[in-house]
Amino acid sequence: MNAPSAASFAGGVTLDALFRANVSARPNFIALVDPPNRTSFTDGTPLRLSYAKAEERVERLARKLRGFGMPPGSVVAVQLPNIAETAISLLAILRAGYVAAPVPMLWRRSDLIAGLAGVSPKAFITLVKLNDERPAEIVCEAAAELFDLSFPCAFGEDVPDGLVPLDREDFSDHPEFPATQTDTVSLVTFDADAEGFFPSGRNDAQWLAAGIATLLEARIETGDAIVTTLPLSSLAGLASAFVPWLLSGGTLQLANGQSKIFGGVGPEERVHFVAPAAALGILAQTVTAPFVSAIAVHRNAGTHAIDLSRVPAGRVVDFHNFGETGAVVLMREDPRSALAVPLGGISAPSGMAGAPIVIETKQKDAQIWLRGPMVPREAYPPGLGNYRTARDADGFVRTGYRCRSDGKGSLIVEAGPERVVSVGGLRFGLNDLQSRFASIGEDVKILTVEDPLLGERLRIEAANPGAAAAALLAAGHSQLIVDATKEEFRSRGTG
Image 1: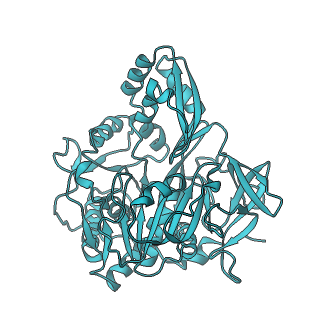
Image 2: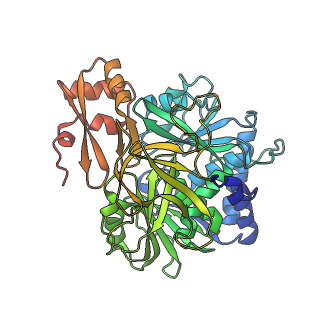
Image 3: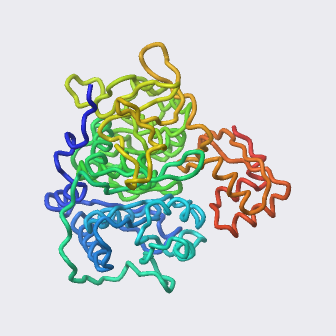
C-alpha cells in the first residue's frame, strides 16, 4: 500500500493563496486578535485586525524583506511570542518567496547558534522587549556566530542599533514576488534528539495535510474562532491552529497562560480552544460560554488518561504530537480519557467511510513509526543526512516514541524519545546538555522529573549551583536550564 501524497490534499494550493482568498472573500472579517494583556509583556496595544488590515501588514513586511535582496529560498528565522505579528511574519516570509523558520521563544544565544547553524538564516525577525528581557539584543549577540545572518530585524520601540525596525509604515517598490509552490520547503520547525536540535522542513502541501486533520476532526467551520495558547513555532502550534485558521477563514486569537481566553472574541461565536492537555482543564475555568471543541495537545507519555469531562466543550479532540514528525488527531468517545493511537491508516474525520487517510501508524522496535502526507519526506536542508529521520523500506519514519499494544489494535504511548527531555513544548537532548556543562567547566548531574503540567522538568545537581547558574547565563543558555540549578526548582514536588 502506498502512502497518500501531500499533493492529493493540497491540490496545488499554497498557504499564501489561502490567506489571499480569505482577504478577498471577507476583507472586513476579524482575522487576528492579540492577547488582551499584550501591554503587560511587550510594546504596542493589543491588535484586532481585519483580513484587509492584516493583508496590508503582510504585504508591507514582504516588500521590506524582498528589499534586502536575498535570493529566493533564503531562510528567515522568527522568534516571537503569541502576538499578531507572528502570524503576519510567517505569511510575509512565504509571500516573499523565502523559507520561514520559527524558533521557540525560550531559546537564548546558545540555543539559537546551535539550532540555526544547519539552516543558515539570512534574516531574523524578533521583538525588542519581552517582559524584562530584550530578545533583539540576544539576536545581535547570536549574529556574531551565525555568519550568514545579515538582516536582524525587530518589532517594537527603541530598536537597538544594527537591527532593522519593522514597525515603520514604509512601502517600497521591489521586484515581483515569485510564484509560491507546494513542492518546496516553505516552513521549518525544530526537533531534538539526544545530541541536540535539528531542523524539520515541510512544504505547503504537507502543512495543509497536517492542518486538515485538526480542521476536520474538530469540525472547524468557515468563520469559526480558534483560540490557541500554543506558540506558532512547532508542528503542534501550527497544525492545531495556524493552518486550520487559514483553511477556515475565521478568527485566530493568540493567547498565553495569563490572558483571558475570550478577550476580543464574542460569546456568540463558534470557538475552538487549543491548549496542552495537562493545562486545558485549568485554563478553561474562566470560560463563560462553551467551546465547539477543545483541542488537547499531548506531547508527553501518560497524558492520554487526563480527564477532560469538565471542560465546557461540545467535543474534545486529542492532538497526539510526535515531535516534529507528525500527529494523530482523534475525537474522544469518552471525555474522561483519550483513545489509544490506532494502528494502520487514520482518516479525517476518523471513522467516516471513504474519508481520506491523513496519517498511518505502525509498531516497530517497540516504537511508533509514521508515514503519510504530513510526514516530511527527507531531512532539511538537503544534504544534511537522514539519520535523524530513519525512514524504513515502506516509507515509515521512526518517531522515537516508545509504545505498547493495548491488545485491541491500538497503541499506548509509554515514553518519549530516549535521552530527550520535553519541558512543556521545549525539547532538549540530554547528551547535548551534558556537553554544554562540560564546555563551561561544570560537573553536574542532569535528572528529569515528572511534572503534572509540563510533563517533565529538568533538575540539575551541581557542587556549586550558584556558580553553575552564573556560568550558564554567561554562556547564553536558556533561563529554563539556568533555573533547573536553583534550589527552589530542584526541591519542588511533582504533585
